[in-house]
Amino acid sequence: MAEEESGGAVRRYGGYAALATVIAVVAGFAVWYFAFGGGDEDEAAAPLSDDVNLMGVAGRETGVIDSHPPEVGELAPDFALVNARNPELVVRLSDFRGKPVVLNWYASWCGPCRREIPDFQKAYEALDGEVVFLGVNLQEDAGQAVGLLDVFVAKYPAVLDVDGAVAVHYRIPGMPTTFFIDADGIVRASGAGLIVEEVLVQELARLGVDYTPE
Image 1 (spheres, rainbow, N blue to C red):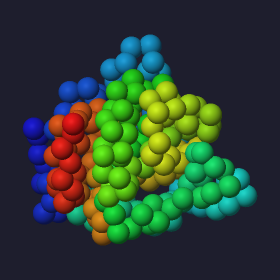
Image 2 (cartoon, rainbow, N blue to C red; image 1 turned 90 degrees about the vertical axis):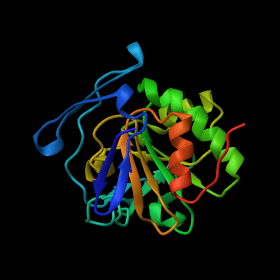
Image 3 (cartoon, one colour; image 1 turned 30 degrees about the horizontal axis):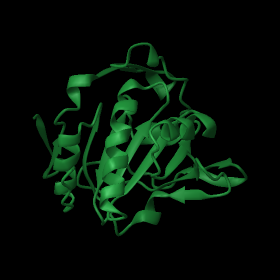
């Protein structure tokens, strides 16, 4: 397991790199390319907007709220995005302050996303509200975002990063990407690629959560 020291905190990538290859982020974040396992399910992502200001979605202000970048050992930047299952609701990351958060960017075309969602749902059910699992769908509509979760009967909350502005601010290097955030809102680890169950258990433990899969 590779480890990187960052600001006194350890960033772990235990199983991430084996299935993740970061290809490129072009100038201005105009186009990102992803090449990960998953065969024909994987394809190039749509262009990302470089506008990280609050934007109106469904008549509400959504987007990046905090201007500081996401850094291990620092407060996760707050954002507001539309609830994928209920477009009348806008969800803020800070709504979950007080509980650890597993923040996961995903998309329906992403093969590794499909492989890790069942493990997230399994932990979500077992931990019964002790940990928040929040899916952030990248540049797809609600039907695609929720449709993929429904395939795996995944019930944890999800939001829509329709224009990719929050992904740009969070410096998402590839899909999937996951941030492990503690109950105080501090980023404790992050990485791109498949989260295998062993890594999920280890990172939850670093957030003070004891999880033993059955």
